Amino acid sequence: MAVNNAMTNDFLHSAYGGESLAHMRYLMWGSMAEKEGFKNIAKLFEAIAYAERVHANNHFKEIGGNADDYTVTAGGVFGTAKTVDNLQGAINGELHEVEQMYPVYLKTAQMQSEKGAEKSFHFALEAEKIHVDLFQQAQNAAREGKDMELTSVHICPICGHTVLDEAPDKCPVCGAKKEMYKEF
Image 1 (cartoon, helix red, strand yellow):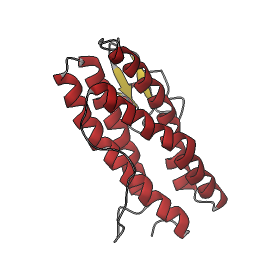
Image 2 (tube, one colour):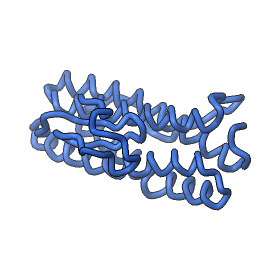
Image 3 (cartoon, one colour):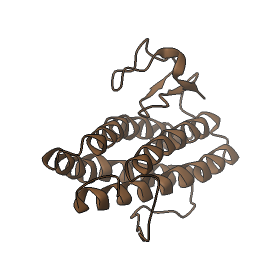
Image 4 (cartoon, helix red, strand yellow):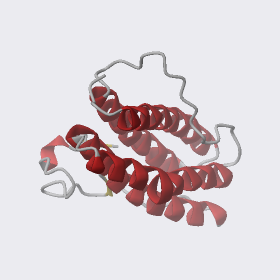
């Protein structure tokens, strides 16, 4: 176990499972959006899938790169529906992380002085807040039968910070340089 406290270790495994599921379902939902003619919403799903992979990798690193015998149940929906409905599933999942999951995980890591887990949870929480808003924008457009307007999506490969159209000179969450951002 890379962390000293069993509760933080359990939370890291849970977060790893949830982020892994989100990564895969967003890739799948992006393909569905593209089939429905929502090219930019598909791009958003693909980009945020990458951010979720960043979070999963960060959590996996903190558990020492070993998932042990853990069975992780991630509570997100995984079916395929119309893009508007898939976006609601994404919004619901992100809201769960922002309002319930990561605040508890972060406070526990802080209380238990698990600095690596604290950083990993903080990075994810800050990105998920942005994801809620972006998915809501996409859903608002899709409800009107329109694609969302964007040129590109940029993801920080260190923390998953997500921004539309232009990467910042320096990541506001982890400090990574603009050149490091992955563009979609």
